[in-house]
Image 1 (cartoon, rainbow, N blue to C red):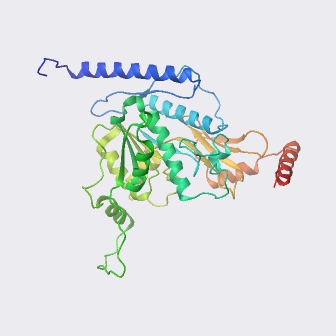
Image 2 (spheres, helix red, strand yellow; image 1 turned 90 degrees about the vertical axis):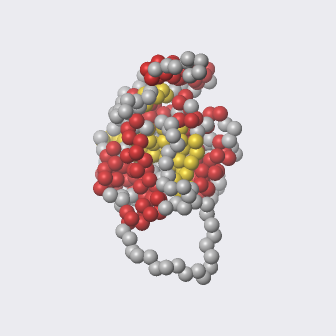
Image 3 (cartoon, rainbow, N blue to C red; image 1 turned 30 degrees about the horizontal axis):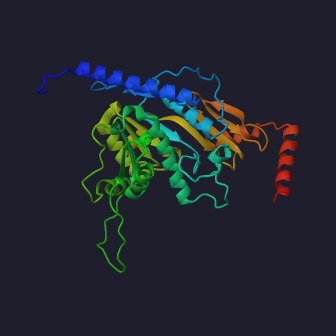
Length: 371
């Protein structure tokens, strides 16, 4: 200002968009050189005071597939997820729900085995027989968050906030992502209290019984730190990692505060499994306003064994069967998410050929020989 470099709001915005456009083009060229045609760059514009949405994606030089298909492997799943997010940004959606299989192995962090096959998305992915553990679950969520942070890097790390449920989870992410230029962002936690071991034999005052909403709200707002959780100033993309019912109360408040000008993304919130919401407004927000942009999950196995559910925005939902031999086969598509009854009816409609049965039987026999 002392040197007379005063620009109006419009020229500042134009210069900012120009710099961002150059960044996006360089990023896209790098991806092409690396032969990773699945990567995409994203562009955000400063929105007006009451915008429908702020985010826009650069068009990719590759055409969209006409028919929705189940991803072939982990890389294909990530690619399709990016494409769905890009399309949602083009349609100016700023409330997105993303769901990947429980404990999926994305192979982002070092010393992980099993990445590559579709089974690593749907069965934990490790070569050991430990099954799903809390460590694997937290690592899977953290890896997915890491992928999304990288996805929005063209915005600059100062405009990306990745929010975990508590400080313990946030600390691990900070350590894992330290000195990684492709993971620059603000890492924070909704619950900022430091865990303290409680004393033995201490008696507290008897508390008055409260309803579900009141209990959840108290747990979020009275966190013993510096008041209710707030997003960092300048946040344009807020990524909430595996939030539960308690965290959703804070997210509802954040959505009301920042408006549609800030993109809010839920990763593995698994909203369809929740029985209660804090209010009817909260239910409407998370079940109606948040768009299921990407969903890849196991169908109820008691109703549809070996079946997967998938939705890639803006396509319909599909249910597919993963045979032990060969590629997944789509059974049915529809515009709404499959209920347990929908899955059962779809599974009962399958006609498995004799050749397919023989192939699966041969695979089972071969596997038994190797034991």
